[in-house]
Length: 96
Image (cartoon, rainbow, N blue to C red; front, side, top):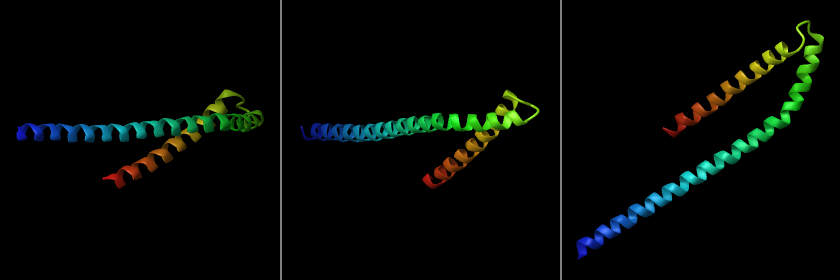
């Protein structure tokens, strides 16, 4: 009977540990989703500002229109990707 009790206790401990791990993962997922939502909000806010400046630059350029816009936005996006990748790679090195 005592052996069976320890099996129950082991199962109970495993269940608690799994529930704790699930709760932690859920918190991480929710915080990531909220951060992504704020990032999307920021991007939408800056979209109009960037579009206004790109349109002013495109008006004075001989290559008017979408080509200049595409080049400028591509450069900004690539720099953003490089910066974010660098930040997250530093975080991963610290986790090890």
